[in-house]
Length: 424
Ligand SMILES: O=P(O)(O)OC[C@H]1O[C@H](O)[C@H](O)[C@@H](O)[C@@H]1O
Image 1 (tube, rainbow, N blue to C red):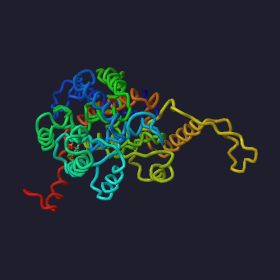
Image 2 (image 1 turned 135 degrees about the vertical axis):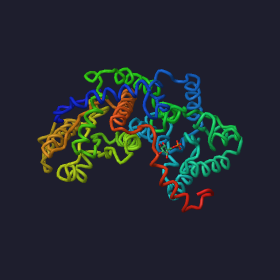
Image 3 (image 1 turned 180 degrees about the vertical axis):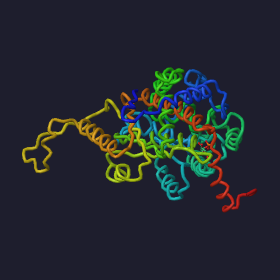
Image 4 (image 1 turned 90 degrees about the vertical axis):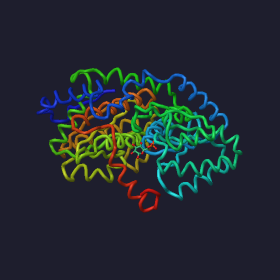
């Protein structure tokens, strides 16, 4: 992984250096606000190996008896899994592993209706994931899925097909799992939802989906090696956090994460939760937005090039695509594309990216280029860990607690009042 800041005017960065190093120290030494939620820093080298083996065992069982794993969860109990599954599964055909279908990540009755209908002719298992065990969206979805599993397989066999990932001790879901006798996996106390893909939250469904979780964990380990170094020059996570904060203080309120490989779409969705919930508080924070190019160059591109100048971009480039295709010569050349004959499509895509970066710099959009070697478990694990360190340092620089999300409660309170939930 490599990060290039040459397309950002770094004048004035020196004055952010000490602040970023202080923030990094606060993070690593666990002396800041939210320090109870820093278990993710060392987790890559400190996994519960007994649980890890259970994850692999349960995955094998699910792969053997199910066409589909219904993965129920929202926020941090959804996005990390979705991001990696979506990146690794192949565009049209899954090359290995069992299909994941998602539930409990919104409240659409139509979605759930269609899902239950789809499952009628499938063999399925269920992994319900909720750290708190009380989140409304997954709780509702699970009520339906549990009923369907029990109807289809009978109560006893349903127990073999329902897996619960939640708090070690508390919460409605934990109580339910204990009462029903479901196999449970743990969301560690010291890891917040949006940092939890490295726990059973992500590892169980990803293993079922055919993702090599050993390699994914290795990627996290590589990230930990590189991005916990206490050096502004050698640790790009610290430098990136400093540059984001400098840009923010210079009036850039929006960070756009850009990709040119559609399979990275949900990496951006995961990134949005990570940064929005970590930084967006106390009236502060960069607004995280994402675009999928070149698709969005034909829509949001106009705004980025020419709208209010309060944007900077971080472009995610993949060095080596997994597969490629070459444009052929056409004797008629009616489409006028023969000038591209012999070129790989990845070359055309790369020139689109380079051209867009040039255009956006011209339009006063600072550009950061983050290159990952490939879309593999290892590269993605390292990338996720990198962003986690960046957000920790960046949040502390901003003067907020990066590890809580009090603002999320407000909609819930209003919704519960409207729904007549007892106690509201
Ligand atoms: O895993 P859960 O406890 O169900 O939480 C799921 C999600 O919902 C909450 O409202 C938080 O804002 C998220 O940070 C969290 O990831």
